[in-house]
Amino acid sequence: MKHIWIRAGAAAMALAMLLTTLCGCASASAKNNSAPTAVALVLGCHANSRDLNLNSPLIKEEVTQAIVSFGFVSVIANDGAPGLVSADNYQVPEQYRGNAQLLRTMAEKSAASLLSGLSQVRADDAEVDTLEALRLAVRTLASAPEGAQREIVVVDTGLSTSGILNFGNNILSAPAATVADLLAEKEAIPDFTGITVEWQQMGDVSAPQQTLSAAQVRQLTDIWQAIVEKGGGTFISSLTVANPGSESGDLPPVSTVDLPATEPVAFDPNAMGDFDTPQFLSEEQVRFVSDSDIYLEPDRADAVIAPVAAYMKENPAFTMLLIGTTAGDGSSAESLALSARRALAVKNTLVSLGVPGERILTLGLGSADPWHIAQAGEDGPLAAQNRKVVLLSADSEEAQALLAK
Image (cartoon, rainbow, N blue to C red; front, side, top):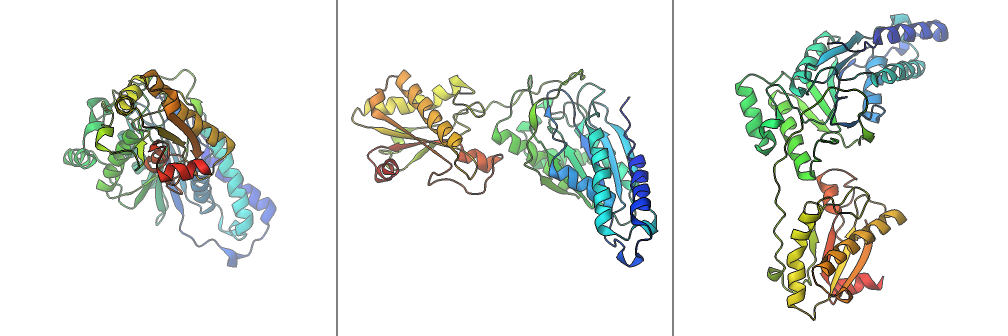
């Protein structure tokens, strides 16, 4: 395996030289007495992945803290045969540890130098063996200073395609606890005792890999959390989004994983009275292309909406109000317009299924709808619940109040 070697040790030497020049004789009373931080970065720059966001606050802060606390940083490239890119202890002579503010500034510069080199880390081998990459990360942390706070930051899709944990074997359909138990029986889980694993960009795949639904990303996250916790560690999932676009360049191939079939959630309007109570077409039922009013799966959307059309045709005096909503907590002009277009898309489907258009009203509320879950962010299961189209009788009190605003 051949990986680009990042000279993190040289960055530490540069930090010491800068402190020598700028600090002079710093006061020994201002020593940094905090425990050192040891961080292992696992980078999944491989095919079938979105572009890695290596400038995220999570990565910047962990690397900077490791350097300013005279700790340890290792970098692992995650592919079919994960390899160590670099591993360095950051030691600065005692006499230069006195000025905490200056040390922080210099550490941030040193961290920036290291982070700028991370974009050069690329997969060399076909496939992805994420469990093996985590095992290697744990091993590197054994070189950290005594008493260090040990952390692993993973920037990867989580969709491993080789090794003992190959998601091509329908693992995504299995309960998370069962997967962890089976791996434990095979003694395949690394010892995460005392280690915090923070995961960024879980499920951020790109073509030709099929996009994961919100529920599938949650299941994938649950599996990795169960594995880390089974190994004695602490798991934290970060909502940091990937950079736009896919990983580019001449990268080795990665197999696609067939995702479990998810049937549309049954929608039976005949069992729901007269729609005086709002009913929701969730993101799991009717999915749109990101920032668009185009169905991601048109046939699936038609199948979900068809029973609503049947109900409306059987009840010719009934008028429907369709309300589009979006994730996030602020309703901009763009989000209001998008939510209105998505409500209109559902109306157009109903019309195509034989419902007169004049019996369907539409409204876009962005994130200002009365059913909105506050502080759910833009990603994750809760955010997915905020991206919906609400079905409500246009004659109901609630609908009349919304239309009057």
